[in-house]
Image (cartoon, rainbow, N blue to C red):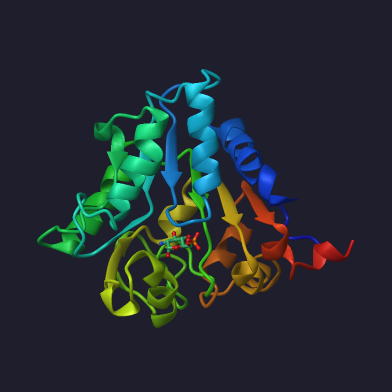
Length: 250
Ligand code: GLP
């Protein structure tokens, strides 16, 4: 059983997760003006810590780079610590020495969120696109905030979050009822325009979604399954997240 025609799958222990993800990204990131797509959440934290460590030790310099977020909650401003703007700035940009002006996140407080989504799609294009996109997977198979049922040709837009996602992300808000109902997210087609994608999954709560995404049919009900069609995907999973993958039998 292969995962897909072109994807590379690495199953790694916890201690190696950040370094494996950093290696996969740096192999594909240009030295000059790198444009890195950023996923939020817990999963990529070891990656961002490892990249920051390599910056501090002088192994890499990404200070001319750009960070492009996948999504943002509608209703949260960049100064709100629960916003993805705050996450990208404090957990990724500042530790990696990337100036705030080189960080693109949709404005969750835009008066017209639909117009902001359109403008964000254009900003990605104006920058020349994403070189390497870091992606996570939701327990329901979502990609960024493209929930099950999202069209595969979707671009950046305002979406309504599923109850599953709001409950999964309640840990960042105190309770599900405090999680915003809407978000601006890059679309599935937008994400697939990235030159490379590094999909990260950690923990047993991702096992079923990861197996469906990598080994099931490409299906709008598992948005991450679209990555089977992308020509340059690396998947890095810890053992609990990889537990349902048929390759683990061998
Ligand atoms: C959020 C983000 C996704 C991310 C997902 C998984 O819903 N919008 O981009 O992949 O969470 O998060 P975690 O890694 O915390 O499980």
